[in-house]
Length: 194
Image: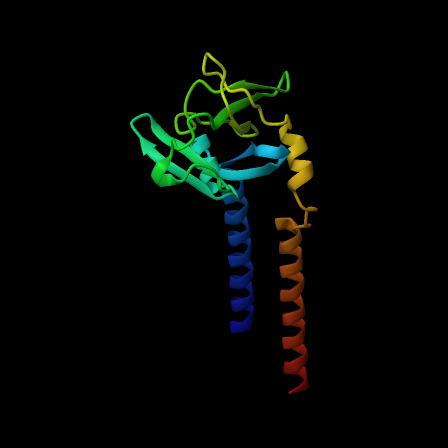
């Protein structure tokens, strides 16, 4: 009798845990942002970065798999260097002829537009693509170098590993009930043999 109670409690606990896990997965609270970084000599970095929903582009860059040198300014965080290209944190504006230009990708036209705000002031949407390029500037201080154009889907294709099959909660429940059934059957056989 005690074993039946234990097995029933185990099954109920498993069902509750699976339901709670599925509910947490639906809530999310995160977003995925594409990142394109253009380095000198045609080198580039592509990445899909998962961050909290309210994250700014600067926070996306901080969470990316790059080495970031930055400095706090009165206008927000400044991007000094990325992967040792640019300037160090303690001398963020060491190169008067170059800077890290910041862009947003227009998904409809697949073209870059220079950001009118700093990376710390802009909150990209889920599925947005943000770009940075080590660039010079023209007489009107517009950046002269843009990152290569990659859509979110193209970045995903190039950077994501093959998906691993994860069992659905229903499959796990079926597996757990099968294991519980086998345990009950083994218990009955052991009692009959004794």
